[in-house]
Image 1 (cartoon, rainbow, N blue to C red):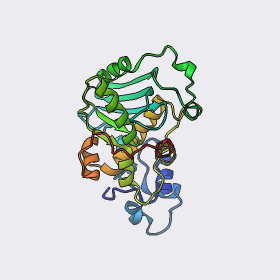
Image 2: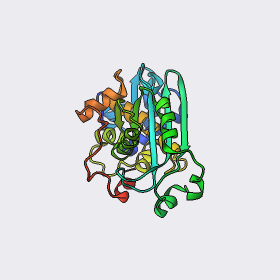
Image 3: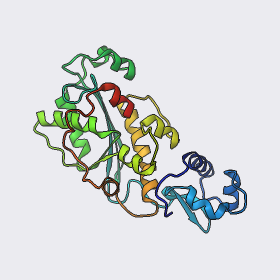
Image 4: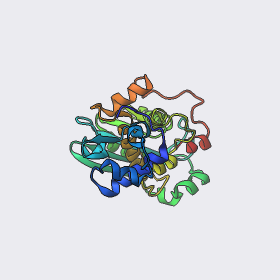
Length: 278
């Protein structure tokens, strides 16, 4: 479909739920009735109402993901989420790493608690459910990050609100003389392109819009799972029927090469700002 942006989010959500329940393309008249749009002229207007996730064919209305793979052909994706002792990536420690890898070889998950040097702030414990007792005896950061680097390989890294997690990851990788050359896709950037004018683009908002189960929010693996599902929806919303890799799509809409350099000093220094963005 030619319109890349999600113009009517609630209508698109209803259309998505309708098609997912059916599982096959729906003839246009039936589809319009299901959306409450069975009035003259609605069929001609449909392409202006739905975003690129939807596909029109002789069989009716379907979903692009029924016709094309995700991740895109030839691309492996790793969705990552980190939890930390506080909200400043320059001075805080990782307490949990969660990641989901999806590519030609299938789907694989990585999760580990991390024993920190700094104390765990009470608000983080309340937010995540991770207690100091749970971190006792957990492996240290060098061991966990060495395993994660092997897990990551050369995959495209997908992160929600990437400035915090990437800055923290780079700092910890630097201590181990590791480098990070992977392309980075920020789902917030894609949401800006797909959802113009919307003020909230956090995981809670996007998961509700795209009908993604939330699991245990603010635990690293569950948040990584949510991020990956949101990335899939944003990918098809923006790519439509085009054959393009996720990393290239991100570059197209940000006009910048995905960065693995730390953010400026002022970025994400406030834990409340960081959590609001997620």
